[in-house]
Length: 464
Image (cartoon, rainbow, N blue to C red; front, side, top):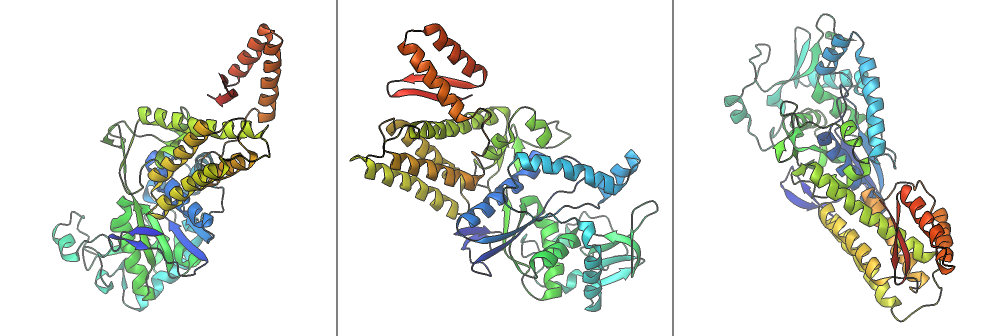
């Protein structure tokens, strides 16, 4: 498999540290509000990468953190007259609801809270101070950027250029304008922890470095997130982690592209800011997941109702293809036919194309095209006379590859046995020329979202 490594700016063969295990860390949300569609993209994309690794036989350790102490959280808590912890609890619960709707928790995910690692963060900072890579000024602790090797290697920014073009407010405490805070002195009324440098709390960048190290080890395989995190967040993670360990922090850095809304940058000021909660009122979140995988992850992607409607119909086509295969399997014959080998080869060909696309830097757009190819082939070539071995192979391959994408996972509200029983009852009514009963059954199914299609090879059904 090849992945585009932001660190080297090229596709590289993926070689994990341990040939049987992959260690992944994805930057998660700051839990001061509901997550929006932009937050959802890295969550869905890198969950899909995790799924593909599992499909390939790897054991995957996957971490998505919660930042649960932050200026925005403190402000929100003060405005509401509550605590930061209660704000965090509220929005982590909301996050889990959204995440389950996006099918992010089929496999185990570790979700550490930053505040659970305060002790480890203090130890990390103390060690940086000991090697003169950090310094204390009036209760604040700053990272000494001059101690970092190759600072800017991820974002391809140079310290000199950053300093000369810096818009950062001048802080006389810093030795260098690009030094960043590791530990922040508490202001009156803020939550704090007792530390060797006084009352305070951790800076943002230190959190991910410490949680990744504590859970996954000093060097991990993959660190991921949105492209907006390349600088300064991920750059600073590298600086502090590698200065302390003198080892690579992560071997592969993956970043997804941003989302526009109706071809405009998403922002609250533009009034085009959509939370997952907003979207779930109009669409099943499986449709949103399908949308987020419809483009190659490094490319920008445009969100609109028109696009979401298109995705909804596309997902319905895949569900209907699955339903057709299951319908034909109900009465499929064990006998083989001369077309079996051709059908089996084509079915396997579509799966192989899917795998090849996924191995090419997680090209989910081409992978989804292979899913549609498989569905179209089944709809065109399979019927009630197709042998059981072919139908089972096609259905198994379809479920196999859509499971990697995290789609086609919704449980049917009406059991298929019930649908088939009603279809059989309707067929019998038509044979007996009891057209009123036949129409009643059709109408009853339509009310439940099941549409029947009378075809030359039998009655097909689909959900709408």
